[in-house]
Length: 355
Image 1 (cartoon, helix red, strand yellow):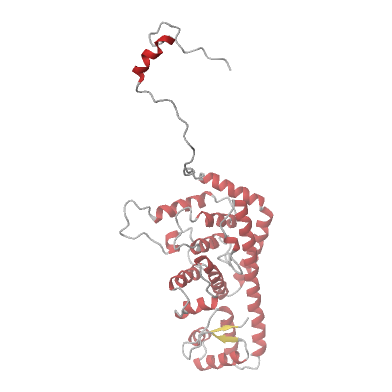
Image 2 (cartoon, rainbow, N blue to C red):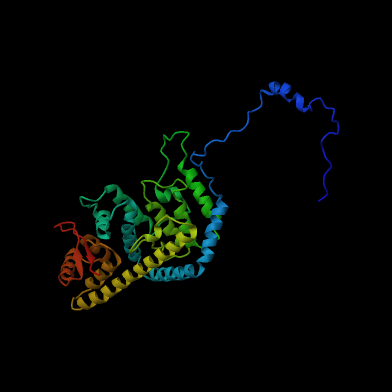
């Protein structure tokens, strides 16, 4: 490059230019200038770090996805197989898997709620002494949201059943603003695979100010729906069945996606094994009920395989059989060890199959 000409004046007679002897005379006139810098001990805590831009965050997850491409394809293939199986199976299978998934997510709320206990609470609002009603209510919400209904991308506030209170303070940040920021990042990451996008969204949930109750159940359910958004049978991707280690929040995006894929792979296999168990039970039940006459045994067997818990009135409505016929067949199945009564009560009884 050509050097630029100097912009300093050539007039060295400028009265502002002083000689060395005049320095002391002029120092008093420069009282307004700051004094010399002093060394201070650097013992103050570091200030807040600037958050990376949304684009930088998405780029980090895109790099993680590229590094895990082979494993991502394997997990996506397994999710596709589950999707196909559920697409061809009865609707009740989704409810069964949603119940198991929600129960296994209960550790995120600091509780351990079995799927049987959760099913009883949903069906009859029965809970044991150690159960926290608030936790059961959140898990009940998860069971409703996992297997169906509008997804989180359509209306996140409606999906979460959350709205700002009418008396919210003007200075308070509104939920729709926090949700809007999270949705904007998710939309910008549309080029990522749904499984990667779900993982990213789960880990950005708390940073966006969307977490509440000190747990991540809402984030996990939302991510489960996003991960399966390309399918039409599974509706949600199992994340926690048999263990929720894939939801642990630590490390860089590459580490988090690696754990996520491990957790999903294990959860999908657990879901498939559960469906295998239902089909094996169906074969056993068909053999054991072969000597029973009428159409009630066949219809009742179908109801019991589709739904996690079944009551006599429910079976009566779904099979079209009489209450007496339903109860008679339930007693026979219980005697053969194929089903178990769950409430321990004399009235309002519920049964489930013994897989």
